[in-house]
Length: 116
Image (tube, rainbow, N blue to C red):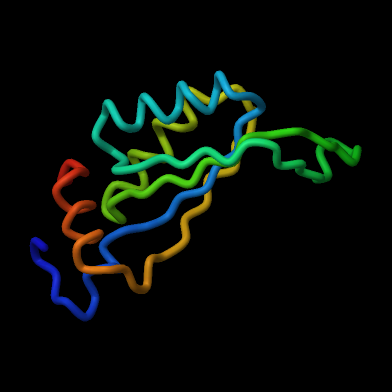
């Protein structure tokens, strides 16, 4: 791992979550993030049902959840890429810290994602 100790190597990465209205959007976002080498892996979890207040109404939507593994230093670029391609006026883009991961997986992340 570049510039990382074993103790905090996982902290160099984030798990980003976003939702898409359909499979086409999810596929497009996943492909673009991988082509840009901003993500090492994008997992799609179809069939989620989201409930949320929006513009004075309670909305219910069937969505595809994306889990995106990224380098923490690239979060702003990832968020900008998602926003630029996303059909929602206000897409969910949240990041969860990785506090631990196996060393082989961390090496793979480090080798797969372009450095900032």
